[in-house]
Length: 142
Image (cartoon, rainbow, N blue to C red):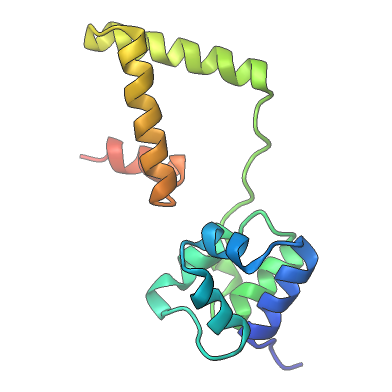
């Protein structure tokens, strides 16, 4: 069986998720114009960005994500694990409050200032499309 073309797979992704090209662009970190070129078969992501493209779509259903990976010439090993189910809002709030207080104590700073700094930190991670696991690994090495 022939592998799907990248443009055909993206069309399937858009159809099954009901995302707009703008939604997909925001998710993978490119412009909507670039997604348009991908969907129209005029371009594909550069080789260096293909793993990141697949990682950004890791919450798609597995068969569709496999089609994305293979259409980009990647092995199925390139597919990262599915994200875990997030904690409910109350649990998340308790964890965040405890972590904020711990950081405030260690830095001898007020929790309000720490919370503001952490909010900026998390926003920067999101802007850079950096998942918390990668951030943790980078912060803790050497």
